[in-house]
Image (cartoon, rainbow, N blue to C red; front, side, top):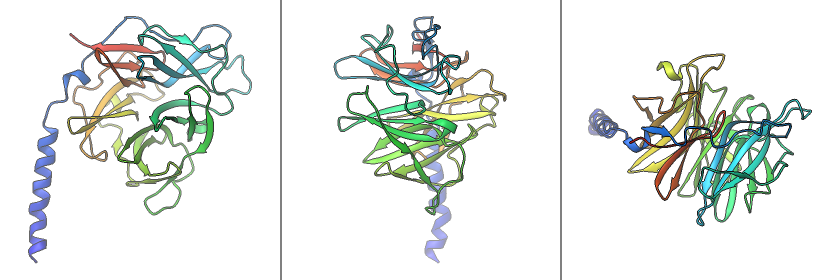
Length: 303
């Protein structure tokens, strides 16, 4: 009886501290951005190459030597048959001027787009969207030559496979040996599944952790792109759309204390102008935001 009587009190206390935590303002250096330089810094070639156009989420990492690495999706539906999406790689000394590795893709034996890249124990792990929006895993020792590991096996809470259909835009955050996979289904909502071996992923809940709307800017589509952690909060960059058929994509921000319950930034979008699929990159001068779709654009903290 005593335990039952205490439950409402415990719930009220938990709710109070959760609300108090979320009452803090979102940090300015994650929300206020200015495009620098004013023009796009990486685009498709515009020529009759395999990467005439680029699309969706690319990924940027800065290594210990200060070199920037960009992985991107290139395509040319007029030149390549059957149509496919291939992986390219470019490098930069400053994160602004980029040089492609070669005139051929880094990987084109499987469909690769909307990738995120983690470096763990000296190996690169790429989680990408494949054909029909099915997430899959590739690995590499040098970031240039990739081995296909197959589609991600995502399970419901009870251990049965999730229903057939899209499970795309994989955004992975690893902490304490646990891989946290955020994925979307038709851009309608975001789910969270976890794994300790990257072979089997189990939903934390069969309900989504972030839904579209009711805000206007994301009432048609949402998908996570990257998760970072700072000052006790997890922050997720997500892309959103207010209309279907898709029109102008935007970049938005949400935060969480537990990776499950998310609060959207009241000032969303943090970037408009059809700039989406954003990722943060740590640089000597501070955090820089890159948006990847439909071209790569660079943003610094607004003065």
